[in-house]
Length: 96
Length: 484
Image (cartoon, rainbow over all chains, first blue to last red; front, side, top):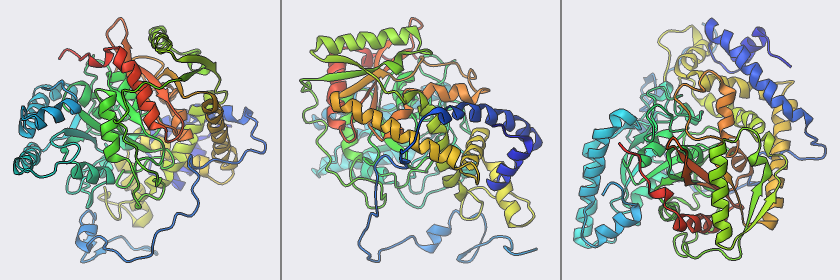
């Protein structure tokens, strides 16, 4: 299994990452080297083995459903790159 | 004063021989004199440090009850949110991020009357093993300025090694506390997964990340761990289990003691001098009455491969939040929303972060998720089962923390895979969720520190620290300091 330059472009699109041509050129061989390395796992027999997503296997941690104080709007918005009053400002989501 | 442990500094203060102000001031002087060469810190707010110290002295003078770390300065990896203080995670994308709240561990440190000394350098988003991936500066190893302190918590490890602070916090996702502790000749603990709340820790790999202490000796680990460990409802993976008095029976040797030595940790790639030092340490344990047993962790050779699928998959999801909308960098010019997100991320993230987001996205993408991500999770269970089997017959597993002593700055930056392999012995503990500690166990002929890694069963920190302390009480490796 090897990633072509097009595959790398497609993954960058999925990851919402803009990569320059120079970055794309180094990314493909580096990712391929890592993918080659991780392919060693294909040789491990994992028949009847369940995936382990978490070392401590939690199930449904509940807390009491009581209202509590949350961040003030001013504090929540203090790091906003752009804002309009108490709202985050972003470009139009639909169309131009 | 700069070489004292937190335990000694606490005693000197209660004896009236030292003030918090004098301790803080000596740390700041040391940082001013030497950090321009080491570059461990990203930010130190001197006025605020002195203000905290004077407040502790005033409390003591009034006869108020003091916290368990009263007047003790602590350096903080810049991945832990401190309310009102810039917290960057070593990334340009968070260059101007000022958290509106404290991480849980920061609240605990404040309650314990510790002095928050400053924020330390790190690999961007904790992705790296040398601290060279910081967007801001390269940190140097106090033992040899041409070498890295390890990573990703390299700034915190270097700060303790250089006697800038008696205590520091780092985070460990694949070895990022233990590996730099080993390379800098200090003590570093990764607690069991779920022992310490991750609330306010900027996430990398959520099923692997744990916050852990750097100290000069095991007793200080016991004291600091007791302060930061324990339940916090704001992290649903934080286990609601009692926190033992880790310092209580610390000096009581564990008897009988069976130590497992995994043969996979002594194979190809292990430096001769490191191997010799670790074998000497095992002899010391045998001399203390321990039974040394060769064991096998048959799936451990796959740990690095599993890690680079699991951690990157989690990272690709965690780092999706950096979209230029709510906080962090937003590109100056763009065409539409999607372009804004792509450009902001493209400009804000460094090369290693991009590489890991790409790998994780690939491992999770349609058509590959079974072959990569789910396959890795299955092998992860086999790795965990290896440990379960080992701990059924051993109290601890001991081996090297890292395959080599500190490597040179720039040595591994062009070959990501060789950098990844420097975590080969530490990564499996994160995958299995078990605690691991690195303690100094010798030096190479070139004068570089060597670390001994001790691992124990989940939530067996109390025994782990006692076992580590047994070795520390017999040796003086942890007392050595770099010439600066």
